[in-house]
Length: 288
Image (cartoon, rainbow, N blue to C red; front, side, top):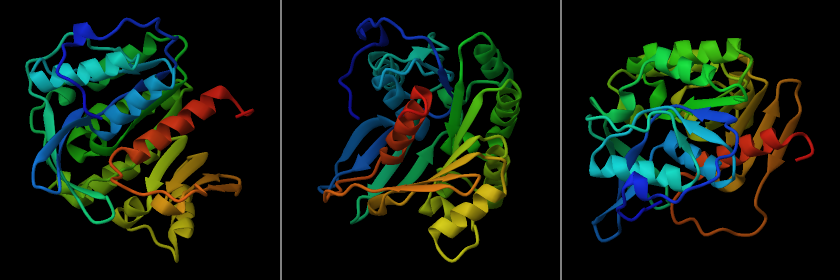
């Protein structure tokens, strides 16, 4: 997702739908290595991608974190506003935007190095997140994951998640572990597991199951094991070219896989868009 350099104020006006989803977490710029060695800048971050994908599907979505007033922050804001997303913190902050360096392997999977100390999206508190959600009478779903789950930010997101579950909202947590973003992997894993305890819907990939060291003979068995360690009603397991499973707590499991052959260029943002589609379908009701 690459956007031309524009200010947030230049984004087209939209008739805003009622706000039904609130998202909290990272917004950053990926610098993706091209085959010739050049770096391609792309607006991203798992929560940012999820937020924008929800907006593009017409879901009234509020992004809760602040964005920087720097060039990259203005582009991030423009991308959200262009997609119809509402910003809970429309006034930019002085802190810089976060960066990630992404290298793609032969299968299009990315490995990352992150630069997030003192960045804009981390200039937020649990109280601010909770207050913003409390002001939305029609809010049904809150979602977070990935870099929001690093142990250093536990005091921000864990109380907020607990408050949202207590308020009766559906809590969605995307494990989406990025071990390269932390020095203490064990603390990170423990904080991810704590966040999953608040979730009604969990999304994990086979890579996440590896990172969490979940036991089991195969990915599906391991996903079942993880779900049973939480209160989650649903768990979505993504398996790349093998499709995805949706596991329900009562034992029902549904598998979906694209029948047509797909040429994979890269997988950056694929899981985020999958989760946005799943949330959109849930909001549409059982007929979907």
